[in-house]
Image (tube, rainbow, N blue to C red):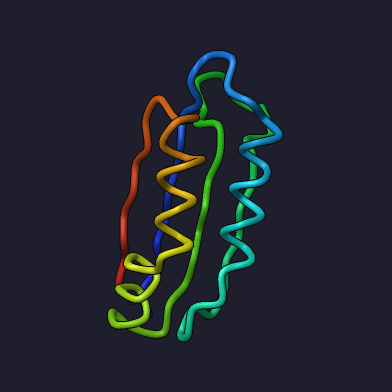
Length: 95
């Protein structure tokens, strides 16, 4: 199994509604082998936290690669997450 974890920091004044649209878009992706996806905005419990996260599980590396190369996923990156984000961190963990 592959777990993909993404954390993002928003630019000052970023449109929170647009972020929510992007997060909903990630949840709505239909990728074969994507077994779970969770998204959310920071609950504000500690200063300095990142603003949003995406955690997605994949059956195997091939399923992760399909997600990474998916046209709609890349549109969301390009049109929503890229313009809104000051910084994005990613990691893929294999279990």
